[in-house]
Image (cartoon, rainbow over all chains, first blue to last red; front, side, top):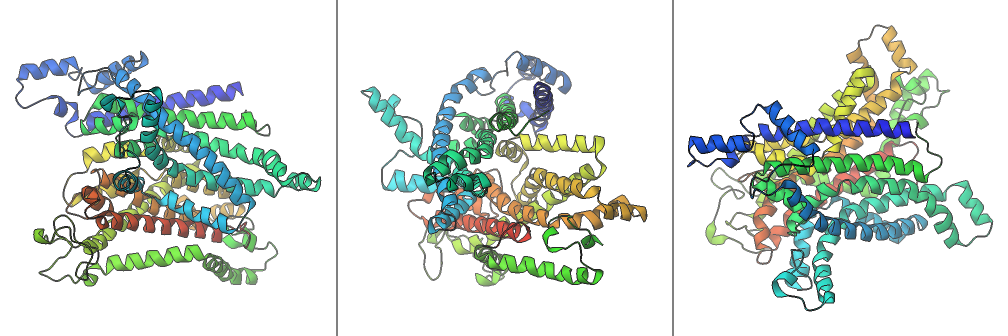
Length: 322
Length: 317
């Protein structure tokens, strides 16, 4: 197991290293490159030279990469082009909102997906099963940004039930009690959370249904039933626990997609998280932030995949890696 | 030749080892019939296929359906005095913010969105099959290298990299369609490569391949004529799901302004320009969104239907 872990970890780190070179080259080879963003036509040649020197752009690309990489190893991703702040500071400020949104969406989805998955597996081919199936197809095929627009219009604009965007309004209008602050935050969270959930809910409930159906057909489940155990005990204590094994690893892999999913949802709802930061950095051609976020996004995918594999062997004693 | 080998792939269950030469020949047709009859029994999949065929037909016949002539182009001509009208007999889905007929634009949008979905799928399939075959067939260092590249493509969050590349490379004008197709295709081949490689690994050591090699058949021909046909089922399912997925991705890119550029209409950029009129002209937002949803649902239903029909382990419902 240790040897396996070391091998996988070194592979993951090597992959990240290659990706960091690819991202660096991609961003610097883009039409115009960083110079197109930093320079204004009114600058004198001397100012340009100073700026180039300041950002290290007067060096050759390999040297620039090595300098950048050396800084990254020390935890320094450089300074943002648009406001000169440290990239790490900007990113750190955006992590809590994204974690809040994802934590809420993932918990909500997990509970609902397990419920729907178990119900539709136990009542296979019932009316409810078909309804869940149809809903899942629509969920998987839904253009997320469009669904978000419709929700904003209906719930926000027409019914005035929830705010259409942002994370809080207390800093503008003021909130008297901590309870008010909580309600304000929850109201802003609800819609983006639901939109983000939809993406995973459909996939997860189908996945658990398939896994549940497979387990329910196994001999030991029949044995449990034959012993006279109540259906509830059989389903939850015997079947579900085993059906959850592949499901949990799938969930761990999907959590790695945190970034990709965040860009669309956070942008449409003006949620001040990492996804929104990415969109803004792209609009401003803020190269250092783009590089850092691309790397961070890939790292989350790679390490959660690894984590899922390890988790799989940890919760299923039949699986052993060597 | 292929079918005489029991247990070679997707169609195992229908080919009995005891079959005589004669029986095998009739089995081939029987197999296709079996798959067709299974597919037809899946009502949802058939509905999906019907909807798709209708949409494709409507997209092809668009100029006739909207009464386009040499002088009148309802999808392009602007009539600023007729902007943002509701549905009427003259404009089935009303008009957009510059007075273009929304129904006409929806049909032309179908042309672009379907085209992007299909051709980007073909690009992804070609790259994926090529790299997957090379990796699976030659193994060793080729395999390791190509699969690490595939891993790298799977590790990059799709929307992040697509946004970055499209934002910088997709220029205005009619070139945007070609560029979006290329970008989508080049970033969605990884799964195809994995599927192809897996199928080839399963087949590579089988006797009929050894036999072909002994007869002096070249590598390229063995892959193309003896191996890939056995992987056709899995790849067909993959292709169907790819089209649906790429239509959504294209619409998302276009909605954020990084994809298909005006004046070309795609369902995604129609939504981008109409989001400001959600309250005053809701049809402009509902129509393209529903078009995307219905098209992608249909592709997914069809893909799953194909998967079930091709899988010998599927039990009859």
